[in-house]
Image (cartoon, rainbow, N blue to C red):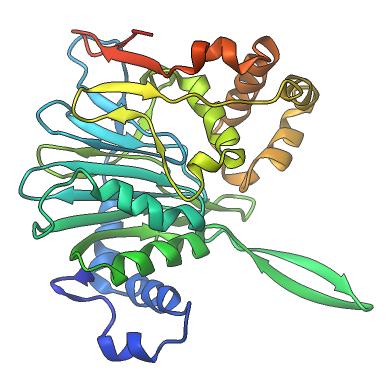
Length: 342
């Protein structure tokens, strides 16, 4: 059950009257207009951004989550957990208020929501504990396109954030667990417009302070999106072809041991040729062909895509990246950085 200020986000009568698939839409409409949630979103957007850097003396221990990944962290081991680079994706935070155990995911597609939320809840502990939820990211990305058929023009609304958000709130609301929604900074509550009239997300990244549960806007430098940044980015692409990960979020972080285990991911040898071809595109062509929101991507988006392609060009055989089909394991060092174990 999804609760706002201790009350159901949608009355049982309204939920029962809803036709199949409409509950999510009704919830989004109700939550987007809730005064308390709008105020909370405004406070979050006005909060100073936390900049996470790695390798500096005294840097807090953190865990970074890439697109389609999740991590559940113990506050005794990790000070911050978060993600960034979200445009049409939505970040989900679920925190056990009794233990401080915190799970963060970077959701990118409605079909992974149900299974992904189950994964997030597995290590959070007591089902009767009060769970706080924060939903951050996505924006009003519906674009108008002219579709011609039978000699007539039709206006078609397209968007990625809205169906994803509808699915998330619907699954949370249908659960037996009680989820207290504290932040709903998504869709229209997370949209700004640039000088050219393009819609943009206000917040594309955040961190959770595990000891307090405080959520702030955040950005991560390249060294802090570790370990195994490029390989993990590649896994986001290849997992779509791997039945092992269908309907599930990618697992990388071992909560009990505070280590990263990057499970093997395979790619076909011809991916090197495809990567070489893509790498010939201009920056603007890369944005148009490789992004769901070309006008909203951060400045380093194209650079990241090119680093992925160069890795695939130089490593066409996935078994060289994952010898003997074993995971790549990284242990945290005393200074908080990561060291490859296998």
